[in-house]
Image 1 (cartoon, helix red, strand yellow):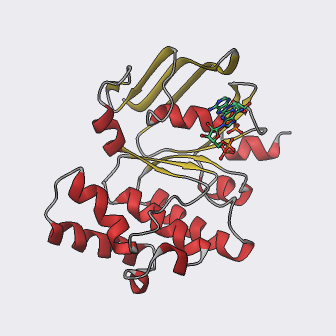
Image 2 (cartoon, protein in one colour; image 1 turned 90 degrees about the vertical axis):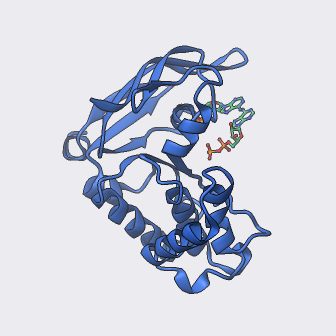
Image 3 (cartoon, rainbow, N blue to C red; image 1 turned 60 degrees about the horizontal axis):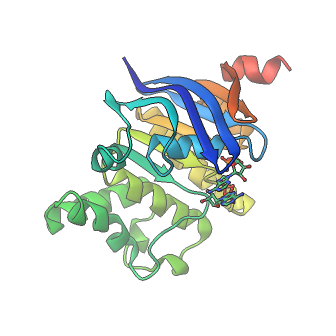
Length: 228
Ligand code: ADP
Ligand code: ADP
């Protein structure tokens, strides 16, 4: 069964229809790259998957749970991790504290357990040495890797990425994409809004193209990048 089933999803901002009946099914473990012009609804769509935006018509089911109004919000936030273009770390918390906050507060994990897991995740994204630093003391690439680790600390089943490398200097893009590649290789279900064609070609199982609030192409990267 598909882990994400979006069917006929509509979303308006006032009189502007940002999503016009989007359909998308995603299997567990699939990596779907989302591309399309600015303003076509990519960001809005992935934000409906974790309830940052409510949708108005259509249905969205995540891991068998239908997303409706305010229902199951806690469950969805736990199962669906998100990484933004701007790293959105808590500036007054250290890297380690950033990773421990949700597991201890939301999941009520014992501190020692949350800390051990946080350090393991920081090791995985290659920044364990920075655990005691504050976000402002890190490079953009390091901050984004912390943001990924922080999302993973909740043990999500799905990870959403909204232009995760767009705010980074070129030399830092690769270190973030490498972490994402490893994550994809581990079987994580991922929806990734990105302009990184290399990532799409190498890592994506599918490429979906948004235009004016709808998915107009849904195909393999091979098809997408060879047949204009
Ligand atoms: P994309 O991610 O493809 O660039 P978005 O989903 O961010 O597109 O935005 C789709 C459209 O919806 C754009 O025209 C944008 O200006 C509009 N939009 C997005 N968020 C809001 C909002 N909170 N209020 C009003 N309009 C919005
Ligand atoms: P991104 O390109 O990363 O999606 P945006 O600059 O489009 O970021 O949007 C940043 C924030 O502003 C989002 O919360 C989005 O919902 C909101 N937003 C985007 N477009 C509009 C708009 N036309 N009116 C009001 N809010 C908007």
